[in-house]
Image 1 (cartoon, rainbow over the protein chains, first blue to last red):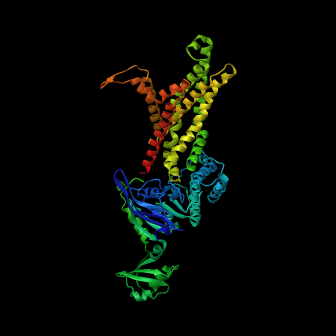
Image 2: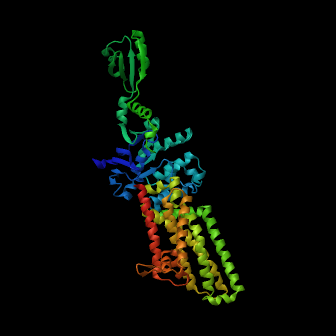
Image 3: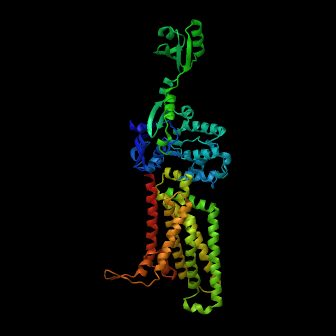
Length: 314
Length: 256
């Protein structure tokens, strides 16, 4: 059912100067989910998010937010949307309060509920004590929080966050990451990043964008299923059945001469036990490593095959 | 239209929060005040000149408003240059584009915001000749028509300035574009005083009249004489709407 998706994009494409820089992007976001958009700089993440937010018209394809077509009824669709661009869209000469009141008016919040909406957004983003300060006088981490507060002041169903943690120092990074984690409990979020760990920590569904194309797409369940495989190499190993019978081995695959992939029962670490057993039995252990997940593998491949000259501008 | 109102309020708040706008307001008022004093001094030294005119209101009022129009030529581009160019440069235009407001609301909001500021300037300039009412009877009709003309010229200049600002991401470039456009309009008005009637395909063309019809300054002439005609007012309305429409088209094209 199409209407089950809070946000759905079909066949999105974008041309710049006659050159197609983003092609065939299909994305879906269900209620309560966090969709992570991963890709190296210049892969087209910002272009895709701007098309989803309605600040850039796609050359082809459609976007629907909460079942409302963004091209046909932009005003109705944008009501369900909060957008934080890569650079927080703040006015340095305004105070935090003035700015958030403007954002609330801009999003058509009735006068009676405006003050409460601004206060709630400030509370959520930890901005209560800086309400009277000029935004231009705040640190980058706080400017980012103000940008986030702007995106949630009208309590949209969908939040689109473009590289929300880029350029923050480590302590600001932790604060903003926690804040996004909290917001993700109440909103459905699309978040982009060029950092793998960031997306892995937050997203319930991950896509990788490479040179304007969808290179990979998997849910957290799919990723969990292919995580935690161990690669083991034994010079004088026993047969597969013996290994499979070891305690707490959930799954095993024979991948080649003296090579196996072993997965432990969920939440168990069997590396030590496995190594001790191999030594005791004289199996000639020579390799025991955690296999990279398909996400990491794919992301590394995208990164290493990167030829920046071929990529589109961000 | 709540979006347009929110943007209008935001724009005038930001204008009044910026030192540039206050400096421009003071600059305009200083020059207007100086000219006002100079024309009063001229009248008191050479009262016989008054007989060439219909009265004090016309000498002081119309002369002052015409001079302020010249000052506006410099002031309005500086005032409108930031409207879209700076928002684009600072990335805040994304906020406005992602909001549930159309490009029309965005442009109308900006226009109203700038006009709130310019109307204040218009009132302050109008207050100068109004002070004379303590000493001499004034022709309020002439002064009101002149002020209306000044206000309409402000609206026309602001519309040109907003369009120029929608074209670029560099505020200074926007100022240069609108300054050049406004000077060109002034130059066309200057052509209006040339008595030139070339014959083209058997028709006699009155170049001066045509030039006067094109330039907003020419349409301001009748208003400064105290004559409000629907034709002139309509000209300004169409002029303003045309440039605002161009700005809307430009902003919409940016998303494409």
